[in-house]
Amino acid sequence: MTKPARPLSGLNDADLRLLRVFKTVVECGGFSAAEVELNISRAAISQHMADLERRLGLRLCRRGRAGFLLTDEGRLAYEAALRLFAGLESFRSEINAAHGRLRGELNIGITDNLVTMPKMRVTDALRGLKQQGPEVRVNIRMIPPNEIERGVLDGRLHVGVVPARRALPGLDRLPLYQEESHLYCGRGHPLFDAETVPDAAVEAADAIAPTEAQQVPEAAGVQRALTATATATDREGVAFLILTGCYVGFLPTHYARQWVERGAMRALLPERFHYAQEFQAVTKTGTQANLVLERFLDLLRRTGLEGAGTKEVGGPQKSG
Image (tube, rainbow, N blue to C red; front, side, top):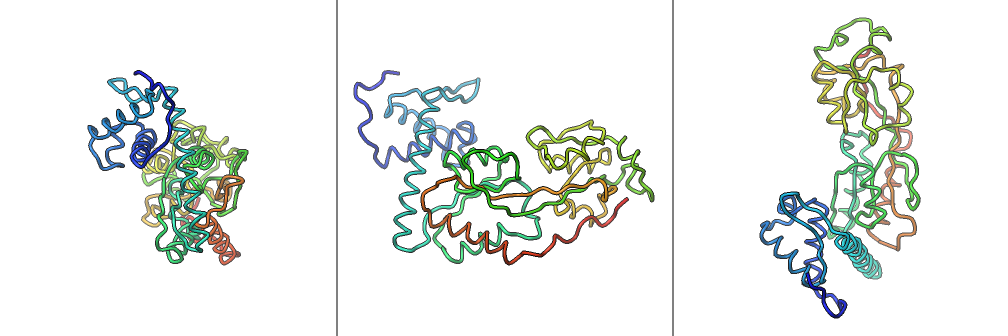
């Protein structure tokens, strides 16, 4: 593709629309996946991408049988677009703050399967934000913790809810939850109906090990005692395997409760096989004033103070 003789002199509304399409295509991983997100046809997306490439004078991606792949210039353009949109949102938030009005967007990334947490701090804070700022647009993305942290750092997300892990530079953290997990087996497992569960029988049972991205430092000691013969990348995958009746695995008590109450799972030796993990809200260090984000974080802090001293209820109902 021939590059323009002159550099890009400015951006107009049409350019911004094309850049938003490009950003969505990159984050969805291709044209097909972006169809649903953008609610336009693949042919229209392809035309928009071609228009943007002509406008910028750059080859942004390769598409074909091998799939969608960003070029080096495309990665540069994507990163620049992220900074551009973050700057536009910051400008809008600062102007709205000058008027004292809650308007704009809150882009939040959340680790999966937290909605069953009894304390509901995120839900309560979102409810309060909607009540105080009816015009605020909330965008939630359910993605893995490492993607959430990257999204906060590069400006795609204003805030994320992730497990407490090794601190990444550039992130501020607000403690939210202490989540308790126990070891479970499913109906049909040899240990499910046992009146007495020996430690050795649990240690010898086929167990589910977390993938590297899902490992929890607090669980390392109890997990080392198990015989891992399967892996799962998330909690739903662990639940699927436990419900086969062939494996034992760790699940948060609030998430497993639905199956415990139906008699489909039981906790095994909860006094030994358990651990607690902290969840935190993360924001980018040094982020400029954003009234929507500040109000949401303030509401998170308030729910923490109001819920101080409360304990998670409804743990495992059947133990070994």
